[in-house]
Length: 118
Picture 1: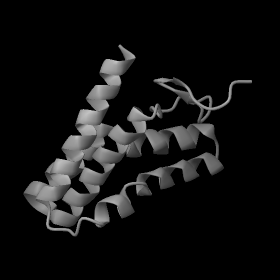
Picture 2: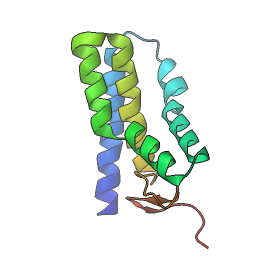
Picture 3: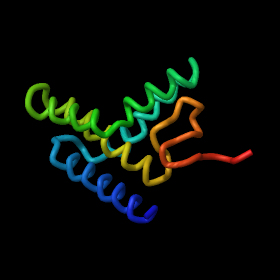
Picture 4: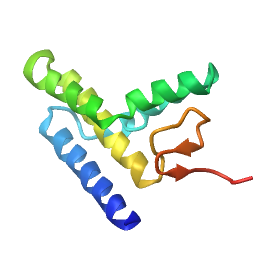
């Protein structure tokens, strides 16, 4: 089942690339912006609870889709770009096993524990 879930995330990442190429931005913006959603990890500097809430909000694909739709219908291509990057980044993270976070800490995700086990 893990392979099927990983392949699903790979397909969603590819869909994010397809969304991006429909936008009128140079190709190099995609790799440059792809890791910017990880700035949400800065919430962990406050505490685990704040970190998890901020990280999960930024990495929620539903939020990314809402942002893309708002950009498409009302707010323009920059907002669509932001939604596309959020969507592609979230799929990429899940390919590598970085899921949404539990309140116990950054290592505790809905896909299982990440990092060195003690």
